[in-house]
Image 1 (spheres, rainbow, N blue to C red):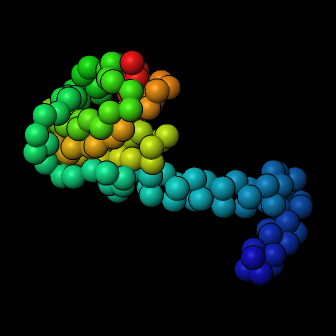
Image 2: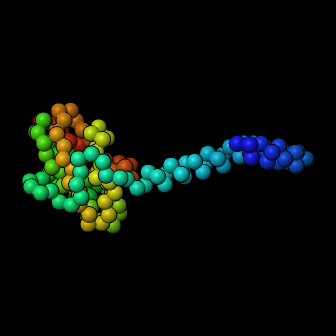
Image 3: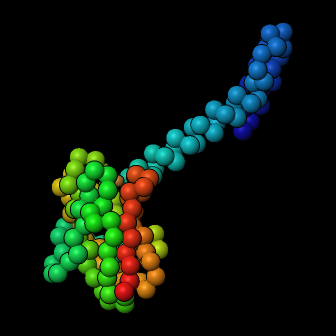
Length: 144
Ligand SMILES: [Cu+2]
């Protein structure tokens, strides 16, 4: 904070004769840009959370593939109130994750060929799953 003040006033006086753009505004834009890049870098690596194990399911499981930046299938009908295992495999070079915000669950970042298994109790309401790295890469679980 203190470091910005002298720099701004000095630039303001030197540019007065030129009459160009206000230096204070430029400084503000620079700070905002740096903060935005910082947040984006943190969001690119997703840590696993919730009831998730690395690797395939140890029993019966619903299988979901990831390819062409989409989930296959993009819609699941599952029995509401039952515990199910969802085995997610990334089938392409692009990294993805399988995240359900409502359940605070994520496989974390999956590289090519990686598999993770999430265990959930199927909600009665519609629940969406998505990849936090790709807008529009999402699917729906319908509790029946
Ligand atoms: Cu993705």
